[in-house]
Amino acid sequence: MGLIRFTQNNMKRVVLTGISRGIGRATAEYFLENGWFVVGTSTTGASTLSHANLTLLQLDLGNAASIAACVSSIRKEGWEIDVLINNAGINPGPDTYPLSIPILRSTLEVDLIGLIDFTEQLLPFMHSEGRIINLTSSAGIIANDAMQVPLTPYRIAKAGLNMYTHTLASRLASQGITVAACHPGWVRTDMGSSHAPKLPQEVAEELFWLATEDIDSGHLWENKRITNW
Ligand SMILES: NC(=O)c1ccc[n+]([C@@H]2O[C@H](COP(=O)([O-])OP(=O)(O)OC[C@H]3O[C@@H](n4cnc5c(N)ncnc54)[C@H](OP(=O)(O)O)[C@@H]3O)[C@@H](O)[C@H]2O)c1
Image (tube, rainbow, N blue to C red; front, side, top):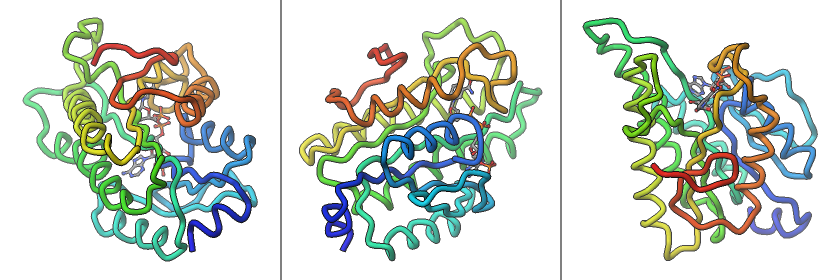
């Protein structure tokens, strides 16, 4: 059924988490402007964005039941997914010591474990030449000593996400699914703050490029260039 809907109108479909604000919202708008179907999520299931080709679903990556319900909605629609963009995330901010284990747990649940759970459950619905793009951060790279603010839970989560991206790419290589991680830079959003130099719209254009250009699988990208993990 999904394949029929896909071939009937020749429009591609992206599943994009966290479209209520920031990079996710700008990216949803960019894909819609370029004629894609967007299945977007927010923790409430609401967004100020509305479009005939936009479906909104509730998703809390920190809640296994919410993840299962969101996947179930996608499965029931019979949609085939051309691109999955794992954008949603949290950054609890600077560390306090001793480290808060509840904050560490909740950050890992949302930014890493929930993301992996969601992705694994969606794999059966991916187009055979589909693409998975994970929003990571240079904060997750050990060699990145420029990171002045200690953000231990966030950095651990993104380091883990980098490794998941790497292993998933190897695993899916024979199936033709391309997997990429994208570091968006310092972006003007609720997470990045109003001082950040880069606009979410610039990241949206880069994510669209990663979703549509002929790229190699299993890399970390920044500004449309492969960079070291
Ligand atoms: N901004 C930067 O400078 C920067 C730098 C490097 C990497 N990144 C990465 O880029 C991605 C997007 O960041 P952003 O700056 O756009 O963040 P943002 O403005 O804070 O937006 C975060 C999005 O994630 C969603 N979200 C939050 N908690 C969630 C949960 N438990 N389950 C599901 N969705 C949840 C939010 O939905 P609700 O509105 O419903 O809460 C919102 O749509 C993140 O993965 C972030 O780590 C950002």
